[in-house]
Image (tube, rainbow, N blue to C red; front, side, top):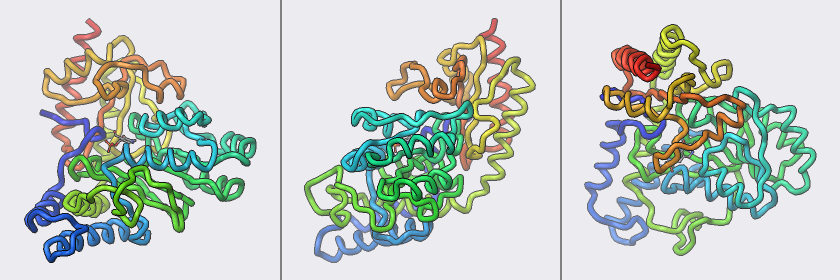
Length: 366
Ligand code: PLP
């Protein structure tokens, strides 16, 4: 099968598998225990924290391991809402948008490329300045891969709203685009392991210098009181190893393959629209609209021909629903397909994916 659904979950990296297995080989132990084996597992957990923190350029105490992107997003938004109104972009993942909407948050509009317009954003911030508790703008969109101007947004917040929490869901961007937690004034950053080559079930919330958030999970005092629950030391080791490997990957190679697929599809498929084409994007995502083609049918037909892609507008149950991202961009949303490449993608994959897609579009257009 040709797998171009890496944005949903990417392949486990050998470095991550080895790091996880090394911790599991220590035997059963709770890292909070007092005996020697527990201490060995705890040391592995702290090594992972240190490695990830070093790769992010932050102090280790600011990395809190979580179960993944959803938990990190929920935590940041809910804790941020305790401080005042949540401002969140119109293209946020549901893990941010749903809790933010539940708090009565205010939506930050985006332009036709799906980016926050910094001048308009500044006006919104000035209007709401006295009651903003948290601003949540993702680093890269999960459907289009479009990158947000986080440095400029951070500058606006530093000027007008220095006390609010600036949260970014960097689940899709981490390791594939620059992420400068401190220079951009970020107070909380969500990361997810299975998007970068670690197993599902591990992630992190990286806190800004001096930032304290009310815990989402309460009970024990694990993770220095930030998150209750037995920490997943094997998962953390895998996550840190995957991050380290992914940060030195050749993403320009992947960008070249993505651009090749984009250009070839554009040449072969009449009326093809590339969402976010003129905006800066992560090198892995290609989100297209194919007029006259039902996206769910195209995904099934591609799957039957051996190509795994996503409609880019399906909810977690797999049912079709309108894409909030495309709606916010004012895009028609017809035949929305997401091809997402990963560290294992080859030029042979791209050539085969092109042939299959062109054939599927031809058949579905009848
Ligand atoms: N945020 C974004 C941008 C995502 O793409 C995803 C997963 O698709 C999540 C959050 C949720 O991450 P997780 O699957 O680790 O809960």
